[in-house]
Length: 208
Image (tube, rainbow, N blue to C red):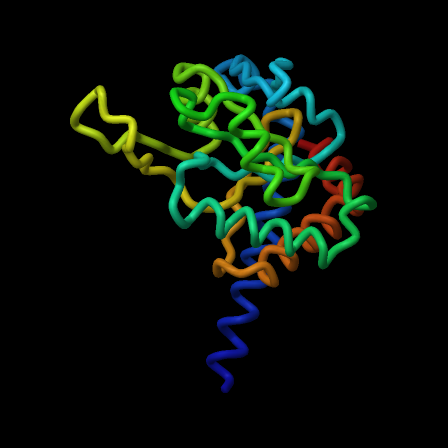
């Protein structure tokens, strides 16, 4: 029993430190000239250009996937939809985002129709393969096409499964959860509590 409690305490401390580092790094991320997240230009289902600066003061909750995904993507987006229903998402200033890494098949209308099956506030994005490669790499995600024949349109896409948190200044952090909406909602609530005390992190970062 003591070992279990000890393990839980370690996890909680590690999580708190991770979130702290995330917000402190947010103060410096915009100064990194090599951060190509700023250069990557994606576009939404209406063809409007989007970049991380579009987030402004919101926190982005990003999921990379594709509309032809047979299992992982619909499960994740369904979890996100349920998680949003469990929290007061309007008071929490964040933006849920689905980024398709299959621009060859996922045209804006297809993405729009796909997301209509989930929560309507989820922002759908995609981009050129070059911008997507740059964006995913710099946020810590990967994807690759699984097909031998270039003419094959029934291919799968191998991609990172999980959510990422990102700010308009380029700071990002993966959000681990056990593939259920309860864990995801809990993680978002933790983000909310950290965001509310963000001013403390700014004061801390200002002394460095």
